Image (cartoon, rainbow, N blue to C red):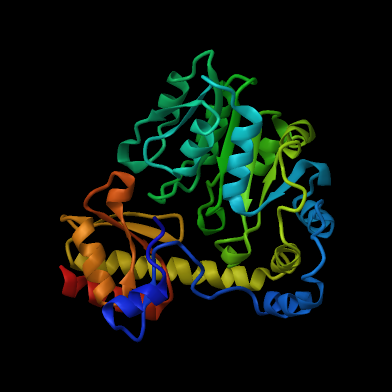
Length: 346
């Protein structure tokens, strides 16, 4: 439930302006250089895309210092998560993840007849030791989001290495870092290095968030050549559109734009902390481009009331967090407007 479309909310509540803060989209759109590249793609829309994503693959492999064969591309991280389930899960296999994390992990596993084993998340964060305690001879996969969606919490490089050292080599650990660009902390894990050192680690990344290419649907995974070869066997031949491939190739060259996005995110997060403190509302400090706010009352009611004020957010009850709102961190003006709307609603 990503929130109602902007146009639907405008019509339903007779509003001229609506701000969507429900799906963690980039408030600045995408790089101007990407827009120029997209315009050049109009003459090739009748031609099937390059199924190998060759140019993007070579560019990204060079940037990450990996073998091009260590990369797989998908229509967003969602498709890659689905491919992992198809390739790795047989009926009755088990997968472990956090009780309050990205729901697509569950869908990927149960669609193949597997079983999800959920680990509790004290302080809204992954308990890596508890995950280790839940490993059995049926465990095939572990899905971990860092930063976690929807809570925005992170664990450190040292914690991750200690965890990976204890995971049996026959269990695949999927580290989903869709929001990794926003984790502006020195101790954030170097998962790329872990991928290079371990056969059982798969790193997922996306161009949807910091790069602002959500509608184009392009994500990628990094792992050993052997593991990528297995995943490629269940991937469709033309799964990433030409426009998406070319946009992503240009996007990774414009780090000035990404740095601008991250800087705004950090500044606006600090603004929200200050304003929420003044309102005596709880929140979970975030390392992503969204924040979970404890409004101390039903998120269902606040969800509707905020839409009437022109702000679409994600109600926490969808994640089992009844009194929380998940709010995308937007521009300074959007955050100021959201705070004023929240004050009115509460």
